Length: 432
Image (cartoon, rainbow, N blue to C red; front, side):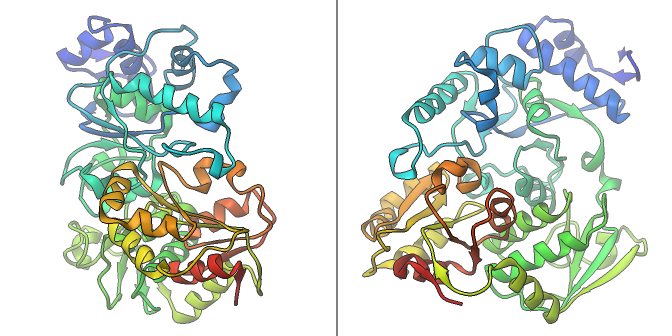
């Protein structure tokens, strides 16, 4: 069937019945929006989506609605509909879970946040659980089982996860945005365009790495630098790195790359599945450009990311993207016998599944006995200014936090690895 409007979109019988309303108004509204989205993109077919992460819960931007009626909020802000309708069931064939929210799942007072917002978040999340959305509160869903396999179509509201899922797993998805991802999770379909199509996934630009690439901070800085040098709509392929990255390093790389560019796909020769060789990553074509990333480039960027000098701090945020279990273990072991300065709020950011494992492993207890907090489902970026408005300076171990928090405040933001940040939290002072 062709659904006609400004452009023709071929629909299967199943999609046709959904569009006609046979599966209810909720799904009908979602697939109608997806068809319009396909028309705007020039896509003439849809593809089945089987994995989704969604930006649900009490997010700060929803306050413009001036109502606590989540059906009304969901209808207008997610379905883009003037008509209020009850939240229905999401696609039975799509594994849906929540991305980050604006609140920790267990505490609010310690984070300088309101009880009202905390309770509202719980109510909003509860409203979607029975409709097929699991609560994960994760910007790193692949750490706890949400892994789209090679060729599988996905949608996600986390920019670093778009990169991770496309590049590391060879799954197929685009950075569609909050609303479009929600429509897809409801109807199980998305336009067949962009990186859902194999020939659009080849690298266009080669990046030769000769700077340090041994630890997480190195890969964070490398991702930041490549993103700054990446032309719009380009796909980078990385060569020359003498140490293969693990998942922890790659998640830092992805977050930084997504921060300074609009990249949705990358390749690392010998590490990602569509880049067994450089020629394979390029699809047999010549690159449009070859860019060198040198040690001088690295040190210049590292210096630029960290505020100059020394100074007292009152806030430390670690784990953006969310930490792996092993990264939390490293913090727990390092902070034993130490005590966070009484003027410092130190947060270790994880999702709810990793938090449960940290609890069982004793890592949460070790960190919180030292005066820090293991928090879930967000970080300073998601929680907003409330959680750091008391501070006059902060320390972070993520270039993404430097970039985005720097746009919200004029305070010094010091940048370094997790151990240097912990030292600063304990002493209450960043030392250059």
